[in-house]
Image 1 (cartoon, rainbow, N blue to C red):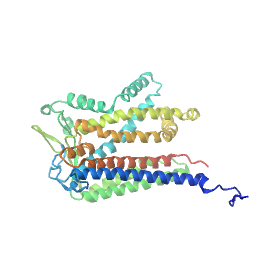
Image 2: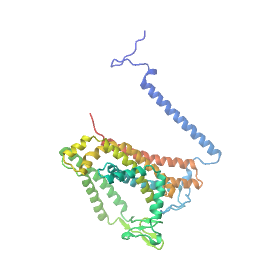
Image 3: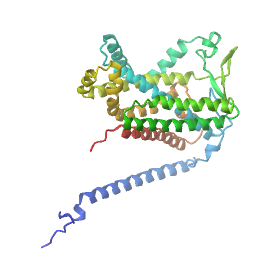
Image 4: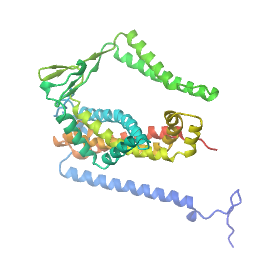
Length: 394
């Protein structure tokens, strides 16, 4: 008769071939090994076929001249392919870093409007959501570029120049921009120090609020400290940046930053499209907040704005953040649709390089890696915020 072994806790432990924990580990190891073997097989097959066709499988081509120019930039066709890929990543980042805050704000406002007691506001918000989220984003981009940029703005000869700061035409959009001077690097260091100081002040005011209950006003404190660093550093260093205004000379725009019509069209289209999905997330999150919270806010005689600002929205965003991550990732990946109107983001420059005879497999791998990097970075940052906002329970 076999006696089952007992652990220190006195419970019988099954043999390892029937132990669920052991079987799970073995299954994961087998699945991982199978995935690696499959990838190795596919990679070897691809390499063999490319070699047989005389196509290089390394990444040495990145040092070759790009052979193309990029509208709206000083990129030269003689520069290496690696430089144009970096430029495409920068242009994609410019969409992401501006678009995500804008679509979050717009989506939040529309989501609140969906629950408004005002009939007109509620119906207008509903029409916005039900219209935009049921249209493919590619069509929104094409419509925005065609209707807003090409059809609504005048020709370059009759360009609008409001306040002598902007040049708006259907061929080019130009806005003021900063040009670096002596000490620009030192000034960026001062701004970085200002960011660190404002974060430290934010944390300090938060701890003061937790300890004493006095209003923290951490936003105003943090912003004030950063502006103090920015203003004092600007004058101490001595005008490290100067403002360059665009000027129309005949059919040519000089100064400022121009050729941003495609960027503006893509940004506007993807923001208004993705905001329609964000609005539904915000609406559902607000409705998920317990009604007792609203009733308690009303009992304290809080105004509608105070009820949203201090009671409802902080709790709603705890619920909304996980699904919002998906919309941020959708916005980032949908930026590849900018290829339809010629905006030089990473997808367009990769396909331009492929069209010039550069090896497609390596470039597609770089393209997928770029979007993977964007997606993982956004997920990491938002998940950190999500953990920060979670309620701590015993």
